Length: 312
Image 1 (cartoon, rainbow, N blue to C red):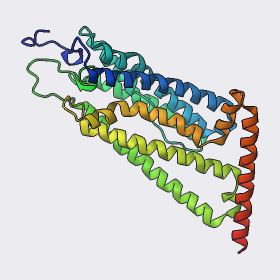
Image 2 (cartoon, rainbow, N blue to C red; image 1 turned 90 degrees about the horizontal axis):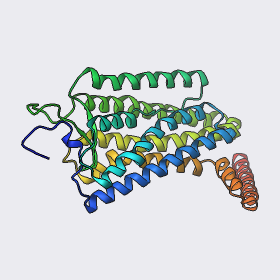
Image 3 (cartoon, one colour; image 1 turned 180 degrees about the vertical axis):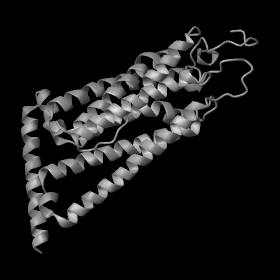
Image 4 (tube, one colour; image 1 turned 120 degrees about the vertical axis):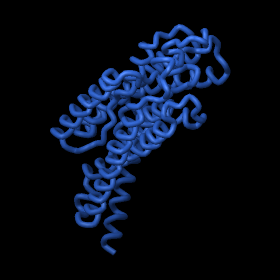
C-alpha cells in the first residue's frame, strides 16, 4: 500500500500477515462469536419450552436475543476471521455494513406488561434504524472494524480532514449510556424498592411462587445491566481510538460477545426449570428426578424455617 497517497478505507485493511497478537485476538473473537451464536439459539429453545418464559420477560428476552444474533454472526464469521487472515483488499463498505449490522442490537430492560413490552420493542427497532441513517445523512462519520487494531475505528473520508474521530459515534455512545444504562439503573432501584416493600408488607406474596420467579428474573436482569454498563463505559472511554490500551480494546469490543455468553449462562444458572429441561433432553432422567426431589426438599425446609422464625 502506498502510504504517500490517500486511500479511503486504509484503516480497515489488514497488514498482510498475522502476528501472534492478531491470532490471539482473532481466534478469541471467532470462537467467542460462535459460542455466543449457539448460546442465542439455546436461549430461543429455552424461551419456547420453559413456561416461566411464556411471559413479558420472555418476550423481551427473545427480542434482545434477536439483536444479539446479528453481533454474534459478525464476530464469528467476519471480524474474527479477518483478524486471523489480515487481508489487504477488504472493501470499506463491507466493514461499514458489518459495523452497523452488529451494533444495531436490542438492549432492553424487562417490564412485566405485555402491551408495554411490544411498544418498547417497536420503539427500539425504529430508533435503531434512525440512528443508522444518521451516518448516511452526515458524511465522513463512518466507523468500521480494523483487523490491525482489533477494534472499530474511524474511517477518514479525505486526506485533508483535520480530525481522526467520528462526530456522531461519541454522542450516540453517551446517549446510550445515559438513557439505557443509567435508565435501567433507576428502574432496577425502583424494582428493588418494590421487592423490599412486598417483603415487609405481604408475607404471603413474598413466599409466593410467582413472586420468587420474578425476583429471580430481576436478579438475572441486574447481572446483564452491570456487565453492559461496564462495556458501554469502555466504548465511551476508547472512542474508537487506534491507540486504545489493551484492556480498553478487550472490554469495548470483545466485551460485547463475552456479555452474550454470560447472558446464556446466567439464564441457565438462575433458573432451575432450564437446568431440568436440559438435563432431561440430555437423557439424564435419574439426575433430573434427584435434582427435582432435592429442590423440593430444600424449598420445604426453607418454608419450615421461615414459618418457625415468624412464629418466634
